[in-house]
Amino acid sequence: MKIIMVHGKLQSGKDTFFKLAKVNFIDSKIKVKRFSFADALKRIASEFGWDGTKIGDGRWFLIDTGQILRGDYILKEICEKYNHNKTLNYQYIIDKSGKKTTRKSYNIVDLYKTLTNIFTPCKDFWSNIVCCQIMNSNCDYAIITDFRFQNEYYTMLKYFISTDIYKLNITRNTVISEFVNDTSENDIKGIESYNTIENNGTIDDYMYKVEDLFNTLH
Image (cartoon, rainbow, N blue to C red):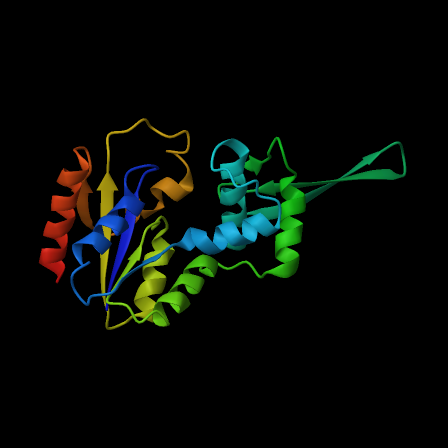
């Protein structure tokens, strides 16, 4: 089995890469299967109030759920005295950089409390789920279509010591997302080099590049 971890900005063509990979092997016995760290995230987020959208606060709800269970957020509490003997307790969330985090359409403190009351946050929370899925998949190529964090790669290395693991970056000259500076879009910049496919042409151009890649790997 070979594992391909695909990274790319929003709408760069990550899921399309998987679809073209399936087409590439359609006449062979090689099994290609898609995996996504976000699949479990979306399932859990839906159970706790996600509206199903990936824009505005819908996307932030996914990001918050993901990072709460990765252990990236911390709950803080301030106790302030007022009116002599009375106190005011104020709770808020900070991220790893120490920045206070709030949302307009939902209470992130309530979301934090609800999730951590049920699950134990862990840096590898989402990657552990995908690793277990791949181990039980019986496929020749496991393609992960949303590689975003360094620890996801290092968790794969721990689970699959003797497996070839490839890191692939898909680039496309599209409109820059409002989330381009989000941690989830930039964390793997510190990881060692990986292959790159530029997806700026037609779908046929993209297909040729996908075929060339698998000719190299196969």
